[in-house]
Image (cartoon, rainbow, N blue to C red; front, side, top):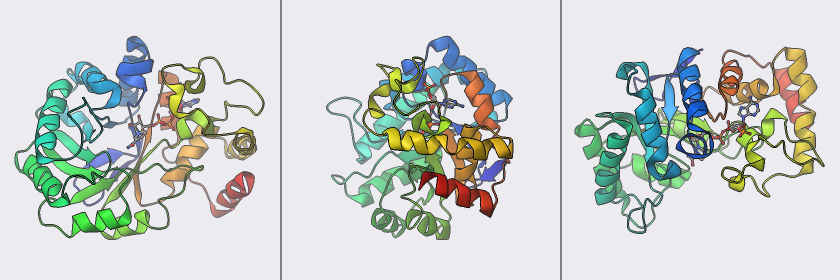
Length: 309
Ligand code: NDP
């Protein structure tokens, strides 16, 4: 496993991070979920991403349980706030940030997280209030650093203009099938010392190549799962699945698997500090961790683009 600096912070994170959306405390059975986390630590992953809203607290509780016997300095822990935890509890007001961070720390069984992220921008709270509350959380030692997910360039610039704690990370969706943050968010953040930790680098498993045009999804896949498949429904079509199949020979020639090629593709960018993978099985963790260190040259990148054109 290779490691990168997270933006301007002093955090050193594995370039493959393990996420917990839909999977842990949710659709993946407890024992298998624990095996994924243990395998992640074994292969050198030290960066774990979660959120208060994942399985409404259950993902954090699961991680708190599994990580309680792991020395706290062996892993970098990131969580998030914004989405509703109850009809009264959502957003980025000072009151919510205080309340939700304390609840996350309790569930995670730690006295601090390393990274506290705004899961989205909150247009209903003055940005000054949010940034002051995040600054307080840093001063209180409850989080070491702060970050955001899916903020627009204008929102990012507005936050950077305010006094207090500065963002060190940005969490956008980014993959071979979703390149939106490249033109604006990447360069803006690079200038400001903000690292990208990118989500769904496999487009929720689509870039593993297991979904075939004209076929039903494999029964043990996210797309076939009643509990986890909702965010995949209707998102991709046979043209995409066919394009992904065209990547297979490229991966084979490189001596890597298709998931490894797709993850190496996001890691080719120096702006990216880590790719946050999801995994429903420990074998996937191991396979995907193998993307660390895979180099893609200009010719391969051109062939990849042509395959997906
Ligand atoms: P991925 O794109 O990595 O998809 C993960 C899923 O793909 C797995 O659960 C598994 O599903 C399948 N898969 C993974 N590896 C393989 C493999 N080697 N071969 C075949 N199938 C494989 O990421 P996620 O969509 O899970 O997102 C990753 C993380 O990003 C989340 O856990 C979360 O931490 C973060 N995230 C953040 C968001 C935000 O708004 N900030 C939004 C979404 C995610 P299966 O086996 O069930 O098919």
